[in-house]
Image (cartoon, rainbow, N blue to C red):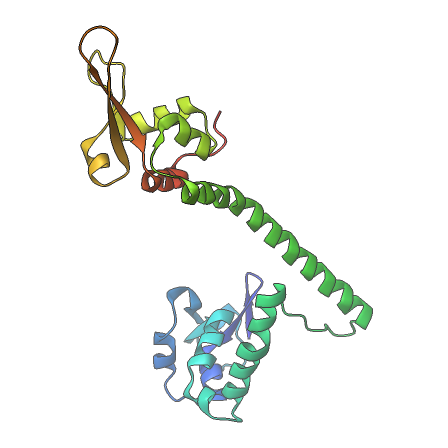
Length: 238
């Protein structure tokens, strides 16, 4: 093993020898480019005699990949098999449950190990709280979308999205959702948005006490459109 930028790297030939793998090139071919590299023995690997020689080293991630994919990992009692069982049965479940895997360091007392475990647990709790806080606004918007009965006016949609109506009108007009005809005062939805179900037009006839009835047309946001806007419009814009 050798250190590169503070991270452990392993000589591929040594790893394959320990695992009884006879084709290091095939093992290397299963790794991503960032999990392997070719260096010369002048870069810090001792124990090799003769002139400068090039050899392949693998990262810690690459080491795990080789071991887990090794056929020996399926042979009960073999080194790869024991390693695979340790990783999948102990390490990964511990990380999933607590956010870390605790192993006592040399000369570490039980009290010190307990304090380190508590620190890992607290960090996990803090991370989960931050994730919940980040997701909460999206959850609330989703709940309002689910509860929405039919379409909403743009102003009502802005309220559901927790943004100022002016902000939503500006976003919709700049991003190909709504427009105004020259000289008109009312917004209309683009045909593509009404066709795909993001917007709809509500048309009502208003009869005045004088003259002929007039048609009133209003663009409205559907629940589908509201769901899309919840992902596109920055919340809290006032």
